[in-house]
Amino acid sequence: MRFPLALSVKIARRIIKHKLRKTPRFAMVLQLEPLHTCNLTCTGCGRIREYSTSLKDMVPLEQCLAAATECDAPMVSICGGEPLIYPKIEELVHGLLQQGRIVYVCTNGVFMRKKMVDYLAATYSPALEPKLGELLNLRLITDKQAETIRKGKTDGRPVITPTQWMYWNVHVDGLEYTHDLIVEREGVFKECVEAIKMAKLLGFQVATNTTVYRETDVQEIEDMFKFFSWLGVDGHTISPGYDYDAAKKDMVKRLGKKPEDFFLTRQMTIAKFAKIQEWGKAFTIFGTPVYQEFLAGKRDLTCTAWAIPTYNVKGWKAPCYLMTDGHYAGYQEMLDKVDWNKYGVVNGVARDPRCENCMVHCGYDPSGALGTNYQRGDNWKNFAYNFGARPKPFANGHRIQAFTGVSIGKGHLAEAKAVLQAAGGKGGGANGNGHVHTGSFCGSGDSSERDALVAKVRTGSQAQ
Ligand code: SF4
Ligand code: SF4
Figure 1 (tube, rainbow, N blue to C red):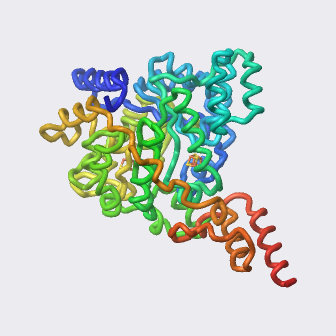
Figure 2 (cartoon, rainbow, N blue to C red; figure 1 turned 45 degrees about the horizontal axis):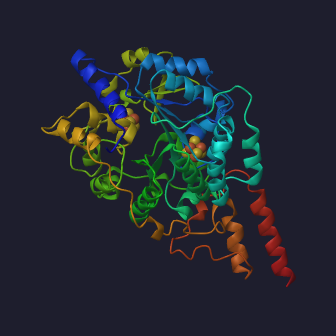
Figure 3 (cartoon, helix red, strand yellow; figure 1 turned 135 degrees about the vertical axis):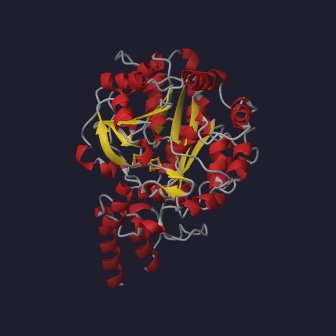
């Protein structure tokens, strides 16, 4: 089956129960943001910018668990910020699983291997040696980590263990060159690939999570699906990048870029997602076929942002994951007080100008599942998709050139490396992959390394 039976049944039962009760609005997926701190500064990420004044704040563990109980969503997506930085992430995952929820840990992948080393240490016995040997051979763990694992873990804290109820949901926005450019850090794509390989070897379920931007090359996205499908990834979430306020402001202020050069309009989204239904057949794409038809421009849907509520350090965020008109103390209070008729696009008319270009997964994917704008046959389509056969892993994934650029020439060192290349020094040439170098929108955070290198190269050139 495309998705584990128990998970599909759980979700279907939730929808049927509320349809029978005629509940007007209810939660399907909780976007839980226990903190907004992140180790990366991705271009286009509104989170770390919108909540820049509360980056040190965290939602206490008990409050996170209470939020899940309150909205009772069958799925919880733990995001942020980087959730693996949350000091009680293991307790949080454990607590949500005990509540019977499907848990997605949405991570940039950088700390995943560390968490899996903890898991191996907590479960170590000599019977694990062949597995350790395999991980060592593939260089997925170091000798030092193997020793740590053999010593065991005795702090009594839970670890994140493989179960069909949990997915690592790894943020990957393209192949190596593109991804590292977007996350503004060299080597992140490679780390994600290593982490995914290790997770699959240990029996974890893994999904990827991709945002499509104006600059995204759709052929590259297809190649990315092929590559990760070949690696045994269990599913892919894909959503268009939306020009929400916080990301827009950051783009203008910090990067000196025009948001319209980066984010998608509705028409552009439809063009980029022209092959989404084909991808849905070839790969295990999360989301309903009805949402896929919407993305491909074949039908209208009405926004149901209330079905994917966001809870974070400020409370329940309304109206949606992307836009903030207020925060509420309770989920029901938010449902009652927000005028939901003010949002979304209906019959081609944006009820709020900020919604005009939005076709994002968190606003419209539940609409496909919940039967808003129902058309004959939709229920069958959704049923056949979810309970149908799972696409086979892509056989020739090893032929995909996933590592489209060595680390030189990307990230915040791009400018320095360009100078180095112009000066005839070593280290240039990373752009031999045919991609247009767009490093000008990188360069966030600490630029001292880049500045020092540029200065050094310039001094060296003058001295010659
Ligand atoms: S990994 Fe990137 S997109 Fe995710 S929270 Fe961190 S900065 Fe934002
Ligand atoms: S259409 Fe819905 S999800 Fe999109 S910005 Fe508007 S309220 Fe948010």
